[in-house]
Image 1 (cartoon, helix red, strand yellow):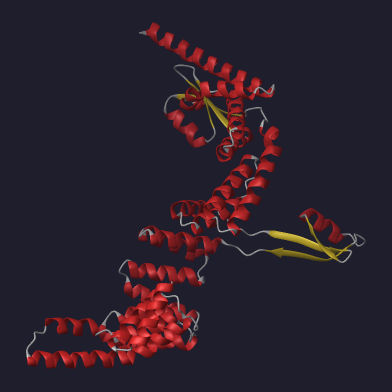
Image 2 (image 1 turned 45 degrees about the vertical axis):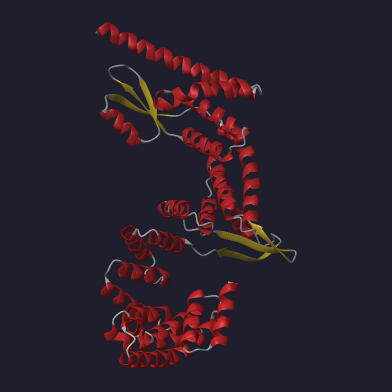
Amino acid sequence: MKKISVSLFILVSLWSFGQEKEIKDAFNALEKGNKTQAESLIQQVEPTVSSNISGINPDAYAKYLYVKGNSLLEQGKTLESAKIFSKLALYEKGPIYSLKNKNTKEKAFVLTKEEAEKLKSEGFTGLKETKSGTNYIQKIIPILEQKRQELSGRATSEYNAKQFSKAADDFLESFYLTQAAGNADEVFKYYAAISYHAANNNKKALELYLELLNEGYTGKTTTYTALQNGKRVGLSEEQYNLFKSAPNSGFSDFKKEESPSVEADLYNYAISLLVADKRYNEAMTLAEKGLKKFPNDTNLNSQIGELYYQTGQTDKYIAKLREAIVKKPNDYVSYYNLGVLYSKDPKTAELAKEYYNKALLIKPDYPAAYLNLAALLLAPDKEIVEKMKALGSSRADQQKYDALVEKRKAMFKQALPYMEKAYSYDQKDKGIIQALIEAYRVLQMKDKMEEMKKAESAL
């Protein structure tokens, strides 16, 4: 048994040596300009590298990443190559942790202490910090930056042309290119998230929003400018401080401006996507986290209120809405939402009406409030229609039927002004148009009904 163990160790060592030789040959081929040979050699070694990354010498692994990234770049696979170069940048930056298996004497190299601790639990010892000793990423940075400029420019044009999916992919590739160059600029990841959201790729948008939140991205930037010969020019922070302190610098009217944070928006976007996916518990956790940082954010307060409602915590929702109104008396949305809540119980219909009217006092052009006031008046309609359907053909039933018809007419006549008011402020809402079609049908206003049917067909 002892002899077999030694033989296996020799095989592993020979395999690792052969692996590293192939990587070196691929690297040399690339350096000599033989890209086809380099790609062929790296493809041959890729399966064994992927299955034994920690067992490869740092210098050899850096060479592997460099050749692999160049190969993908040559194939036009910019995103994949950027991800590979990002790994290379991290690997070369270090530190790398080396350990040795006390039984087989096999060496292992990992990037994090967590991975190192795991290996220690598996029988590895002699933890040391080391580096790859290479700086291959510097060789590729000018090419990566050129690609980034091309991609980000194209992405901006695509976004402006409402080609959101293409823009999202190109913005994300731009981010990976900056990361690969060792200077990750999350603004491109933010643009990618916004673009995926606009393209209704909610899964990818949510993934990026959450990444940005976890990374602490705020989007805040500081710009430095000054007047030179009557023209405002941009300066670096160092130039700004230098020229501002020099009396004869030729610059004047120095300005330091900060863009606002987008962090609260990130919370709101992510929460809205979680709610759309009915992941209410995750959304609630995120909303509570966001409110700790932004307690006065109107949208976040509205979001968590809606979550209370969706999860059956109506009392908390009402308390949240009332709290929002105290903080912001002109918050017509909170008045409207209180109206919606109280309209669900016939016993509190008058209270609902009161809140809808309060919302309209603040915002008279609020179509949803008018439509919901009409809905309150029409609440008995379903029951009336069911009664009409249940009647027979006797004279007594016909009299009851006629009485119910008149009752419906009176009810719709009372609700009609609210529907028409809603339509006057929003002529594209199908719900409003369909409500008007039914009202005009009941009231036998055929010309108006046909007019609304044409409006519906035109949408």
